[in-house]
Image (cartoon, rainbow, N blue to C red; front, side, top):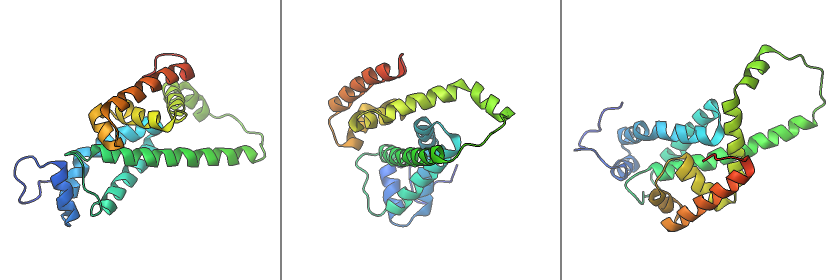
Length: 193
């Protein structure tokens, strides 16, 4: 863990650290990173189902935060809702990129291949397959419901924080989550979230 920047008394809020970082204090940004990197990585992993992609999304999220630190003012005392929203956007972009890549691969001529041990091991990891199935279903939800699910159910934000991040009423977030759960049960076939 990074040391506390000089001149900060007590446990500074994210808003205070963000402002200090915007004023050029790199240590304050480092404290924000230390405070939230694990939560952002966990959120990115739940959205992508891939350890390495979650690492990339986390890095890109904090790079975006560093670049935007002088342009944005945090609405609440926590930077986490904003970081989750950025990570969600980056994960969606990655999902679309992978979809384009897969479509290109299906157009390539198939050659005879020999199954190797790695394919057998990958086939045995059912949990990862199930996670990707659920994530694919989440990505098919209408955007308002998908954002609520990603922030509250996958990102573990409170409905109040998600409402602030989305700019809607807390009751709207609850309603979106309820509708999303119903749709997901229909898509995936059992209680998933």
